[in-house]
Length: 149
Image 1 (cartoon, rainbow, N blue to C red):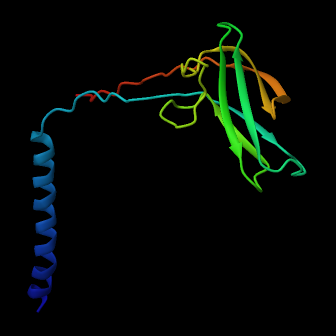
Image 2: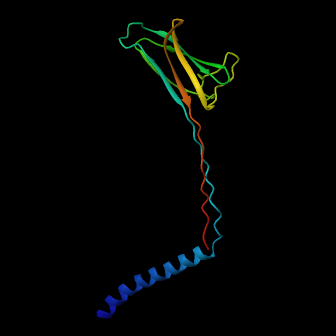
Image 3: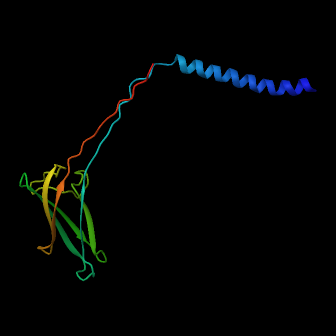
């Protein structure tokens, strides 16, 4: 009876040991690893918004205008606010694949170009709010991880 008990414990232990050796052998004979290269992206955006605090206007059109002081270009985004919608936030610049994106009158999409900007939001053709911001420079650092031999 003792022999049977030892045999039952010895077989699974032997199987595990053989399995571990096979796994190590397979890992050791595989192709050498290549250096890992990461894909990376960093995008800065500025959030602009307007709010009819007491909801007195009802539906209205908000026209956002962002002026790049370096290039002199103006970028526009028009948003229609519906009943019971008192405000809206938008991101500058907006991706051109978005149906509503910041663009010049000629249709040129806004870019995240570092520099100083001013902005305003017009409601019913009148400047309701305005401000300014500085677009930061962004950069990406990539670390390459190599297999040590």
